[in-house]
Length: 213
Ligand SMILES: CC(C)(COP(=O)(O)OP(=O)(O)OC[C@H]1O[C@@H](n2cnc3c(N)ncnc32)[C@H](O)[C@@H]1OP(=O)(O)O)[C@@H](O)C(=O)NCCC(=O)NCCS
Image (cartoon, rainbow, N blue to C red; front, top):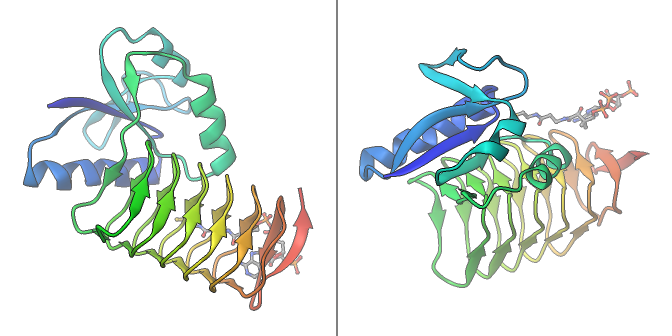
């Protein structure tokens, strides 16, 4: 069994712990140790498991532990990953057992979290530390850049190119053949019908940038 811990003890972190439970029901793969979170005190108990320390405490670990970064905000997720430099830690991809992924040319990097109900079809490249929350769909010939996060029930059509650190709010739909520029934020419920530039927030139907950052 692999020792595993989660960074982030908020709502999403607790949900990610339930993915570990679902995997363990099928095959006892992970020994869940607890959470790392700067917002809690070491020893606090979250859903029966301890806060093991703050993120800086990950630097002092001297045994092999798998780490999942359960942080939705792409830039925070990237910042945290870049702070950690400890050869004892690895960052596996975790996939809920009921996710549907075809075997036809799907590549998924390290550190990804793929939640229950998600469907990933064929010829898809998902880079590192991508979160696909509950019941997302990813269509053919799509690529997703590292650290991007998709909230529940986002639909990505075919041949979409999503660059690094994109955040897509719950229920948004991205139609086919579009590019979403890096660090862009798409609001909940948006329908994206044209490519979006980098570093903007776009909302509505059809989605339009309302600010640049
Ligand atoms: C798009 C979003 C990131 C904007 O957040 P923000 O930068 O703090 O922007 P504000 O809340 O100041 O909103 C700016 C304007 O956009 C509007 N707006 C915000 N989100 C919107 C959305 N999803 N659809 C349509 N309009 C939206 C606001 O009403 C506001 O309009 P106003 O200027 O006329 O008052 C946020 O509203 C959002 O949709 N987040 C996704 C949340 C989500 O999916 N959570 C899932 C958790 S599992």
